[in-house]
Length: 172
Image 1 (tube, rainbow, N blue to C red):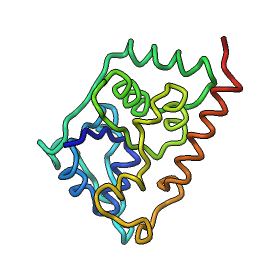
Image 2: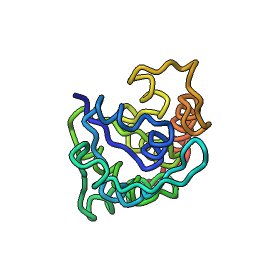
Image 3: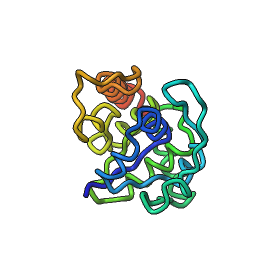
Image 4: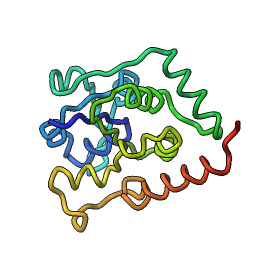
């Protein structure tokens, strides 16, 4: 089973779309410890706020991943050689875990800064869009109703922006 590391925006999107359980069944899901605490609720299709406690509601269906603060700090320093981008703690932890994990783990995120940072860190081949994740579990691109941040085209634009930053803004 393929390893999948998830950011909070993806988990919330999957919960809102009713596809969380399907992803849990299709992948060996790992969630950064910080991200677990970030996912506290989502909205149902009718707009109802639904509280969620990932560790208790989905016990045994995913693994918590964590990494030490020194590794995260080193990663932040390397990113800042290129530019100052705002990454939340969950995204930093996810990128640090991805970089250290030499298995074929993929990170799924919709966050622009995290996607750009993945390109700067040369991890772009190990990061996938929300749309690509849904296609991997059997959904057709034509039937998906996605937010702009969840689309593959948006994801590719962010990767391209990371390429430009890497070339133009490298601080030696």
